[in-house]
Length: 138
Image (cartoon, rainbow, N blue to C red; front, side, top):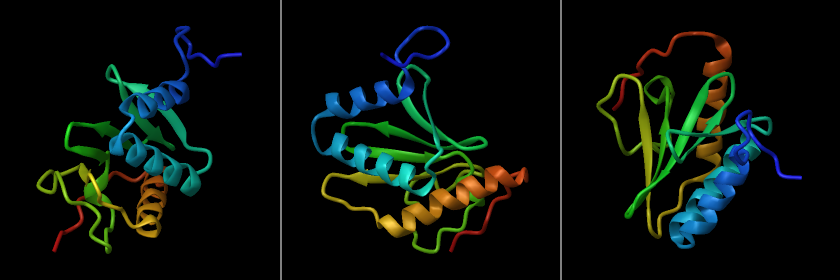
């Protein structure tokens, strides 16, 4: 039986599966890998499909989005500016007051342990009920 959302369209998880498959190249592999890491870090994460085709992972609020472009897979953290990033994973959208992103290019690998730590920190921030406050970058 196909899982569907409230409006009868395919469930977000299925749509994300389809997006990964349709990319079919390094971008699909990268998005699939990051999705796996998110689900390993926060097993009860909610997968959503928003804004006409953007995978979103949430836990007590949005954790991050997973967008795919021609040259990058971009993981944008909704409250990234408030998260500690000792491994320096954030490499995009660094000037904003709220969001931070990780751009992954072909052939690049993201440190699994550091990424899971970042996901867990995002989930903890959402669960704390606190407003996001920008942390200083180096």
